[in-house]
Image 1 (cartoon, rainbow, N blue to C red):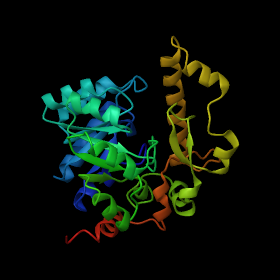
Image 2: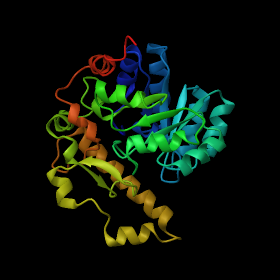
Image 3: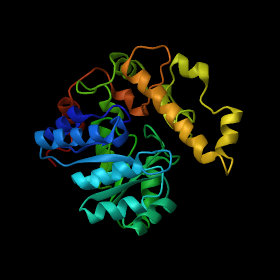
Image 4: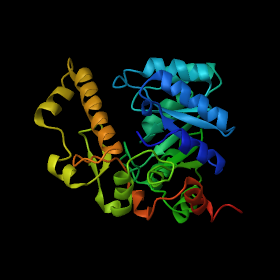
Length: 299
């Protein structure tokens, strides 16, 4: 939900009975992040979290972590890196940490580091998706993981939510169906794309962050392709240069997403997952949540 989740969405989510999270990078500065978190706390008592990229591509990581610990959010969601430092700092401040994982090996590693839960990112997730199908990944983790498992990917309607919870997970992380919400800050064009396109229009690209990421296959995405150029790939695998190459790729990719998210441009690179198949209109978050949980609300 890079560039999508905002204060209004998280406040609405809390009022609808679910917990929302915002990527720390959705704020241009740490000061704006601080103001945003204070705004949410003033408007709602519902728990909420912050997504934190913990690898070297996020040059603001250290500052963001310090501020989040200082403010005392309810939980952090880590991705794309080693969460050891985050877990230690968060726990010292009474904050829970949920770690994105895509396989058993990494799940066991973050469990050993003290994570409070793992978020099992499967092959149907939006953004930085995994490679393993939902049922297979959950079953794999359940064999050895002792902390709670939250499933991410492939839940876009009430039937899919009920089926996923029946697998024995502690909860579900849902994102793409909220892009076209009334509270979402993105452009009308982005929201309309989530209505017009479906799951068959979602493709993986390595051009945005160096790590495979799902986007809508717009004409512009088809034009530029989804794989890094030979030079980009070469730099990203060079031991001495890959750190800086990945940072540059990440920066350029995020700027590309930002421009497309908030303005009408032919350079449309919109991040979304296959569950946009369920998006038929722009609706308030409360209505989206109500339809999502209608089959389990009274169980």
